[in-house]
Amino acid sequence: MGAGKTTFTQYLAKALGVKQTVNSPTFNIIKIYKIKNQKSEIRNLVHIDAYRLHSPQELTALGIEEYFNDERTVTVIEWADKVKPILPKNSIFIKFKLSKSGRSATIIKC
Ligand SMILES: Nc1ncnc2c1ncn2[C@@H]1O[C@H](COP(=O)(O)OP(=O)(O)OP(=O)(O)O)[C@@H](O)[C@H]1O
Ligand SMILES: [Mg+2]
Image 1: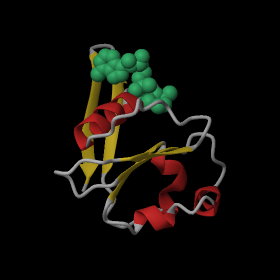
Image 2: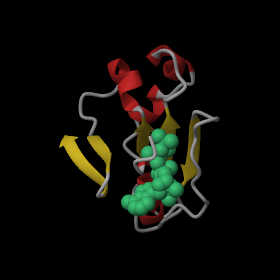
Image 3: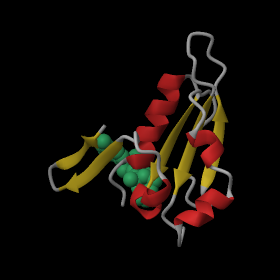
Image 4: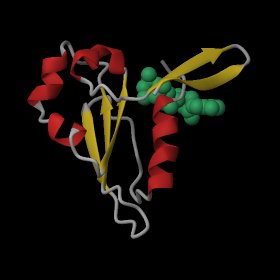
């Protein structure tokens, strides 16, 4: 908690060309940002916070698999362990760590 997941997503959004402000989706669970960047193939950034979910099926019920299967959509999920059973096999996992010396992010699986 507070290790920088949302902050990481905000910078990723900027890099992808999202113009809107990216806020934590803790209360909405899911937020979708349209990308109108001529230079990029990516059309949507989907930002999910699974923290408050009780089962992966709650995410499936929101129709998320449509985005998982869309190659023009990048999906970022905070607290992804909560929904691991429904994630695509080729998902990238990034571990965020908070320590006394600061914050760090490590890609643990590609
Ligand atoms: N690399 C960093 N260096 C300094 N401060 C940071 C860094 N990353 C995030 N912060 C600050 O830490 C706070 C929490 O960050 P953030 O909301 O990104 O965490 P989070 O992992 O999404 O937390 P949560 O689990 O509550 O969703 C924010 O105030 C943010 O500005
Ligand atoms: Mg967050």
